[in-house]
Image 1: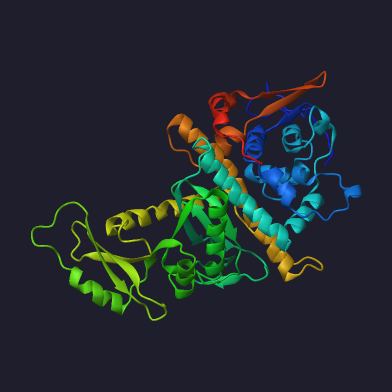
Image 2: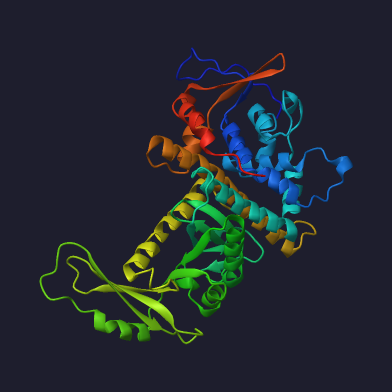
Length: 460
């Protein structure tokens, strides 16, 4: 630290001289784009009003809003470790993009330090602030959906709920070893919208929690919050792990429509046997499917429920394949084939969660330090999970915009690689700031900036 770098010539080309410079440069010009997303969504202003800040006002150096921007922008740029904050202490783009101040003032002020941001995690981890922070993620997702429709909310959405095992290392509290996946992990629940790619909620749970643990409380509360905020009708989609009586009864009691995969058993197989016969005639060379429905009551269920039997004939397969769906969708509006089409869209949700883990390196590393209680550690890890979901949503907002501009598919990883990680040089003259981005930004930045107004300003 603080050492000088003598002029160095790489052996590949002795005409090149490498040396340190006092110029204000950055490799993260995309921080300005992320700040624009945050400002247009209004999420920082909303959180600033709702979060309970118990710090002494006389000793506050960095506002709550500037610290929140710092955490979220760094996470979206791939700086997911708080220790990276020291490395980025003098980054001019991050100084400008995360500050509340205007003009050249941000360049003259220190950025929040690692201990400061660590204390912010403790503040966010309190029960009342966790709730507000979770609601902020939901509001951000709903803003993005409406902004791409000229401010109009969707009339209905299908919420996908699934587990997202996150591997842990060392002696993490309340983790558990899972022999199926082969490692110790936490078992969060994540709610997303497969058709649009948005993440709307996350709930941290202990390792080895059953698939549906806490789902009967969390899902209805989340659906109610979406309904109150947007007036949007919400239905829920899930796999076989959530078809126990507690979850289904909670959804029925709240009048929430659902569709989910149902594990087979001897009673269901006996009901299906009549339909598992090949039709007369030669088999075709294309996939054929038939859907049948009946009512069935499992031993743990309080009442019979509508079951969809899906029978598939694969070319060259000797036997027919089949599986079951359970649903509360009304038979007048939802035919069995329509329900099957709805359920199959769930595969997109798994792909989006794969992007989340792959691109943002989701990890929960808070441990018991000093006098920290188990509840405080779990609270910090809950906040860390939500930070990753926020970062995903920021990247997804830009990804969806680029897909509309280019009329081609974009992965989440492509956004930082080709847009955000762009070199920039900052020059100050007469209290005016000029930011010059590298030539690599010329490919996508012009079209992105031209279409950025499509992300309308949220009402705050």
